[in-house]
Length: 175
Image 1 (cartoon, one colour):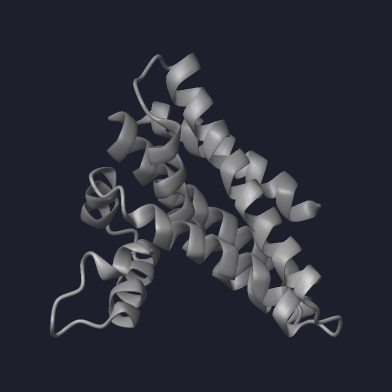
Image 2 (cartoon, one colour):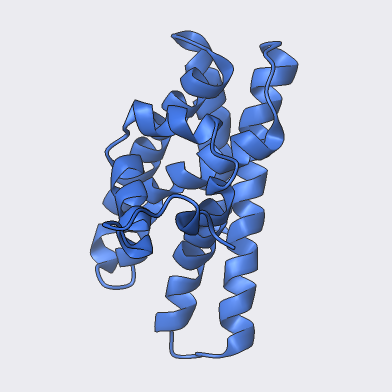
């Protein structure tokens, strides 16, 4: 069951909550990312978000099939996991900070909202570079917040964690 059921109030629908989380993640709301540290149920929304973002191109493609959509969603989850592991490894192994991979995944998955502009590449192929660079810059800023919030890092240390995540994500965008 996804987390939106556990946080639902009578005046809030599950769609409103998920949309609110996406907007807050996109706005780089530090308090939202901080709240994710203590919200184990948000992993359901994080997984759904990453899987949906990865599956959208397959859903809109000419070769629409269940296998293509499921494969895209699974690849998206795998790529988000690799990105989270890269950030976690730099923070815990190189910078000697404490942190759990599931928490890193949850925060990193919501940082993937920054990659939404890459969904428009097929519509605007002339803007390929702008969309990729803009999305990666936005993702970099989100990952700096993740590094700050989860690992209590500041300054240059957040650059290292965010840089590792962006490097992995860039390589995966090229695949």
